[in-house]
Image (tube, rainbow, N blue to C red; front, side, top):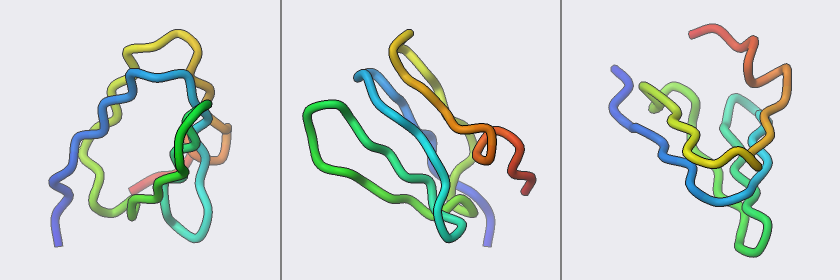
Length: 60
């Protein structure tokens, strides 16, 4: 299966990884998970988004 999702981050949030899933935790909203294998690119359009080192270092 090939990756097909683009993740656009526009809200303050925390991005992490758990069980090979991207965990998106916005400041004032519900947590969302997306399989890492589905993601082509993550675009950060907010300077208040944080990303864990484990997520940054994960290789496809």
